Image (tube, rainbow over all chains, first blue to last red; front, side, top):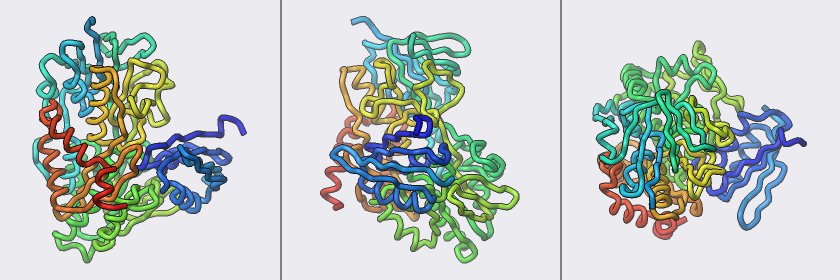
Length: 79
Length: 394
């Protein structure tokens, strides 16, 4: 894993239109093998990202929650 | 204290409100804009779907207070390291800089879109494009209308759905409902991205027979085959396309350092102070700023007020507040209300809320000069999302 295929998206505080906007833009600019780390605070993000991954055929590697943020790791395996 | 110079690039809602809100005796204020015309952009929706002929343009000079200097020039470069804004004709040194350049539509970013955009228009770019939508709707005699945004970043998040609702209203009142299918496509997981608002509008979409295609992020358009293809692998065949082009931060300005721009050409800022990353004396507000709220006039207004307070008094914080009016057709509307700390709340769809939208449009020009600041302060306090949540439930 190099920095070139790893991208951090900080969507904390975003609920409208929300983190999915940032993820969709990152997906457009991504290539297979890229890893996206998404930070968010809106709890709705968990179900949305799972639905997005299942629709696009990409992989949600992990979802972790702590006091300040929800961290979601996504691997781009389909474009 | 010696007077400080403030250069504001862009005379839209944010730039104009900020210029008019700074203390006259403390600042020399210059607004630079390539155009001296100021458009009330939300009116594009009503030109496109209602054939509105209402005047929605004013001379920018008439909207700025007398002590604010207006320069009609194109900015070519901004050197944040040395505090210089360069135009084609000269250069301006500043103590404080505010970037309020907005975002612009660019149909050429999606393969095949430029061709149909030229023919069918859209309701986000300008008056001429909006008039094309109105003309095409009036010439429509049945078939499939595909309406939606072609890129995840979009001005005014409610506006794609507002267009769908007003299309259905138009088609229904014209008696073409039986011969028409309306498909609304969106890159989001549901018709409206914020769940609580979606809960309110989804039943309406169903009741009005508007088909919704979610996770439909436009990849390309086959103009000859009348088909839109999504990145996710789906397609929609249309007879009449109403497609909002992608928008990005303004190009053509060379920034030093370039690292202040993100991949969509938006300026990276601190979301609470609107300060440009790495520069205490530079700010970006409104659509031009990469801030995790909606791209809307309300946000440009509130961010301008925060930056004005920081410059006038030294301290203020933007809470990420959104308050976007949302026309759902047949004389009813709602508002999309949230903040950094309060995800968008549930808010009812009523005639009064649409009336409020139209009232805000009517008082827009006066609000740029601060005429209604006292009322707005009370209004935003009374419609605080934490407070409304108690009233309308989770």
